[in-house]
Image 1 (cartoon, helix red, strand yellow):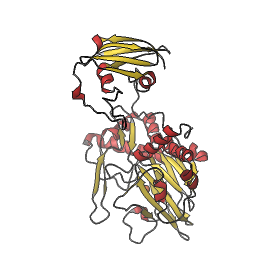
Image 2 (image 1 turned 90 degrees about the vertical axis):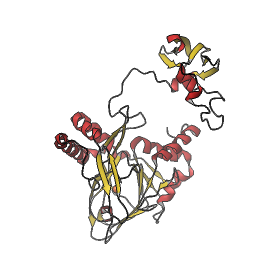
Image 3 (image 1 turned 45 degrees about the horizontal axis):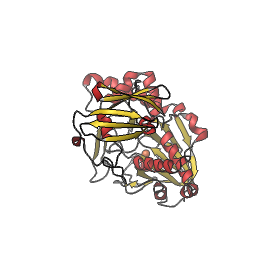
Image 4 (image 1 turned 60 degrees about the vertical axis):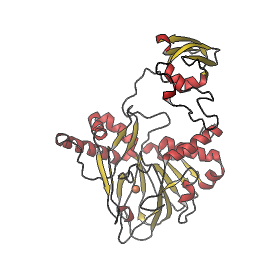
Length: 383
Ligand code: FE2
C-alpha cells in the first residue's frame, strides 16, 4: 500500500489516510502513540513494550502528520515525540472496518468441511516432517485450516507419539499421564478403555482450560471394527445456525457442565457453554461429550425444554453421514485433532485380534507459534 495523503481529524485526536487504492482508513492518536515502533517504546530485541499507557498524556493529540508515500510521520502533543510508521504496517494493522461480522464467524485461516474431505485428508510422513521444515509447515497448516490431519510412518512403539508432539510443541500432562493407553481393560477407569463404540465427542470438556490438541497413534489394529471417525464441529455448528438460529443461541448462551470423577482423588469439573463465542462473535470452540456431561443447572426452567431440543438437534447433525470422515487406522499411523473444534469417534470393536492406540494432549498455541515461525522463515512453506 502507498499512502497518497493524510488529514488530521477531531483537533488531532485522529487522522485519516487515503491510500493508492482509494481507501480511507482512520487511526486514533492514542492508538498510534501506544503502538509506536521506536526503540524508546518497544525493546529492540524482544519487541516488548517498554512503557505503560499511564506514560502518555490522556488527551494526547497529533500536532502534525505527513507522508512520503511509503511511511507516515506523526508528531504528538504535548510530548513533542515524533514517530514513523511504515505504510505496509499500517495496512496490516488497520482496524477501521465498516462490515460487521456475523455471529459464529471464523477467520480466513479456517475452512469447514464435511465428508467431502475424505478423499483429500491431509497427511505427511513422520520422517519427512522431522527432516523438512516445509513439509512440517504444510502439515501444521492443515491442522490450522481443517483442525485435523494424519501422519504416517510413526514408529509403532510405545511412546512414539511424543516425538510427534515434539515436532511442534509440548505434551500437556494430565491425570491420565503424559500419554494414555486406549485399549480394552478389565476394570476401565474410562469408557474409552473398553470395546464400546464412542459417539463423536471432544475430549476432556471437564477441564478448564480444555486440552486444545489430541494426538492418537495406532500401534495395533487387527480387531473387528474400531474404525475412527472425525466430524468438523464448526461445520456442524454452521448447519445448526442455518437450520435453527435459536438452537445455536441457546447452546452458546447458557453454560453446560461437565464432570469426570472416575478415579480416586480426581474430581474434575467445568462450567462452560457447549458453543463458545468471543465477545466479537468469533466461534472459539465446541464442547460436546455425552459421557462427561454433568447435570445442567444453569439453564432457566422455562428454557430447559428448548435447550434439550437444541442439544438433540446438534447431536443429530453430528451423526449425519455427510458430517463425518471415517477411516481405519493402521499401525504406524497417527491423527491429530483440534480438540476445541473437531470431534472424534470410534466404532465398537470386539472379537479376535487387538486394538491398541496411545493418545496424548498438547497445546494449540504452541503449534500455531511453530507454524507462524516457519511461515516467517519460509514464507512458501504453507503454500
Ligand atoms: Fe476421545
